[in-house]
Image (cartoon, rainbow, N blue to C red; front, side):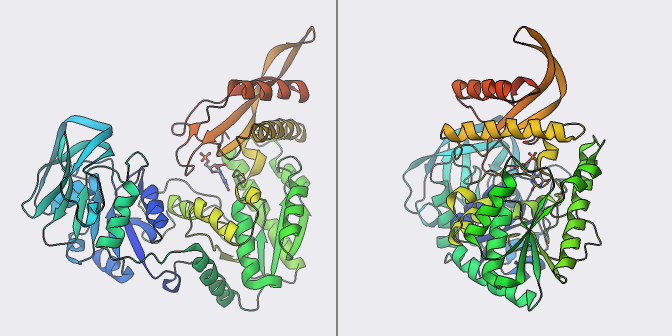
Amino acid sequence: MNNTAPDLISERVLVLDFGSQYAQLIARRVREQNVYCEIVRHDISAETVKSRAPMAIIFSGGPSSVYEANAPKCDPKIFDLGIPILGICYGMQLLSQSLGGKVTSCSQREFGRSRLQVKSMERLFAGFPHEIDVWMSHGDQVNDLSESFDILASTPTCPFAAVRHKTKPIYGLQFHPEVSHTSLGSSLLHNFLYNIASCEGKWHLSDFANRATEHIRGIVGNDRVICGLSGGVDSSVTAALLYKAIGSQLTCILIDNGLLRKDEQSAVISEFTNHFKADLRVVDASDRFLNELAGIKEPQEKRRRIGYSFIDCFKLEAVKINGAKFLAQGTLYPDVIESGAAPDGPAATIKLHHNVGGLPEQLGFELIEPLRDLFKDEVRKLGLELGLPEHLVWRHPFPGPGLAVRCLGEITKEKLTILREADDIVVSEIKNAGLYRQTSQAFAVLLESQSVGVMGDARTYERAVAVRCVNTDDFMTADWSHLPYDLLARISTRIINEVRGVNRVCYDISSKPPATIEWE
Ligand code: XMP
């Protein structure tokens, strides 16, 4: 099922992605203004754009230079559609060049804060002060503005920092309104969407929930749906939405694959039975999964075996409940874009997400993915709308393949027990310190290596645990959390004292990129 069906969205904005690391951020910022927004390829045709009837188009930034031979371009007919366009950074340079201006490399590349002087307080800058801080990140800039444009704002080094076409609804910004360092960046987007593109703000999650439930009912009819429940926010919200839509036609299945966190199975069961009346089946498949994984060290192979085992378990359960036609999954919009599965989505496939691209072809089910248009923060809001409790909605993400991605090398029951205990200490100490909501994800990783230590007066040769704790908005980039030393010390002491088989604890201080959040 694809909830991008036109009946669910009455007002949309398209972001043309020129390879920007901020394209998703732009889309989220637009949605924060209650306007639905999608990311599409930069070379989408003008006809396709027209058929999607967007209220506005935003050109993202990008790493290329518009004057290079293979620089990404847009269909020039887009400029004649009469649809308001906002070009950001590379997007601004592209539209300026396409409409008669000249772009060159700056004598000094500019990264970071800059002071913007606003010259025209109308429409785009309505209600703005004369000066604001903006965030710049560019090595090129427009150095010869076509006469068809007016200058709206400048910085000391960038005379054409904000421009407007004289006769078309086309605007360009050299700085980034989407990043939080640009003060009033969201007001600027608001002005573009409401003053220039005449949006009315029709994207509300409560409406989305109502329309999505009707849509689900229409698709499912009298059939049954099974929904894999992991206890994470995505699958819980998926289940809540489906339960609202089809009630007793939903069967939720919790597969204990032996790779869950400590006490996870009982926690999910009690959460679930407290909040839904839907049918819940708990399948203990831990032996099956651990047998499949025995002796396997290679991370991708582990993932593949876990993926197939999950589907096999679902199939067996579906037979037990007299057949289910649909399988519901909590796939989110970033998964769809990153896997290159979005219609007209960005060109590059960033990773094959297990939810989207990693399933066996002969699935045997039709997929229902009611959250595939939503970002994580929207899913959390939707969860609250649907009555899920705060602590569930704010749980840190836990990967589908579970502890398998955090237990490096071969997976054994003994190693999983060590990891579970260490992980429980990390999370509970962070909770006790009142820092769970301030951090985005925190967990332990069991390393393959062993090292010499001394405990009592005896030499030990035991395992090392890495503690990973990150802060991030979107899990695409992340910084390691600067946790207080005394908290780190408590975590380390407790793990070494309480978890048999560990004599060393390290704290992972790498950011993403270049590292990833999980280790594998
Ligand atoms: P990485 O390690 O790619 O992780 O920086 C980014 C976020 O994705 C989660 N993750 C997964 N989630 N299935 C999931 O449902 C997976 O296979 C998977 N792999 C990574 C990870 O925990 C982090 O939040």
